[in-house]
Length: 410
Image (cartoon, rainbow, N blue to C red):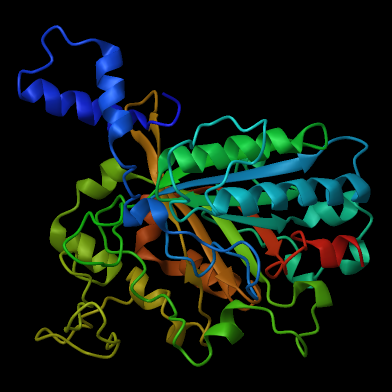
């Protein structure tokens, strides 16, 4: 019975029942029929795997966004330091490598993901500013990890911000994602404790007729302006080079993740007319095309005027203010999840965006863009930044390495 997936067993029973042939049949008869069938192959969604080792960068950065995500920050336990942190990263890396390959982690596996394949699982690890104090590695802390400046629109909850260690989990199956979350929490043992945890989701693969840019909970196509891996300066913008950056050697191939929980004030947003929503964003809601014309991928013409002599893309439109050409070329690789944490006491949905963006240097990426948005973005009236974190994410581990080994064993 343990070798039969629950789905296959129920599917067999349902098929027999539909033909009216199970009247008086025993459960053991159904099991015997299922066991005689050849094992079914996993669907492409379940069989897709992501490598943990061997790449210059960790998985979960350029990996296509998955349908389910968990973001979780840990603080090292009182008294824990560099030795305990190294042991923890070694345990986490071993578990992540097995789970991303669709394999059980060992005898203590919870079987939550039993019967499923890897389902595009990716696990990404990073270090917060406070980690280097706790491990007495402050000399190895990059200046790019200095705390982010305050922004006028911030309403940050300190209990849901920061952290010594950060983990990003993504998968195209919710049970596979939860299995990874639960395993890493168990692996932490007495070395670290959860500081905060957030759950997110995206549209599932195959939900649309063809692949397309995702929509957020405001109904807007979100992520059109993301830099592409085919861009000649993509690596320069997103990843720390092996030399010449002035950053510590252990960050070669790494990146910096800015994490923000952005609540969307949906009741206010949904009261706007479609025309006004498009003016706030600067793009058509239906297809993501800029208000200056064309299709979603048409370059926005920021100087184009309408028949009334006014700019087609308003001066305070979100898409205009966040455009790289408006920010000295600053670009972010956005890889967010939506979230919904229930209905607040006042009846409004606690929902929005778990914003995650990647860059080689947040002082040249997130900070200048957010400063400009903070000063005059029309969207600011409909969102609220409620938590924040900045994490240094080292490059991908080589075979036999654990994540952060080049830092912790330097």
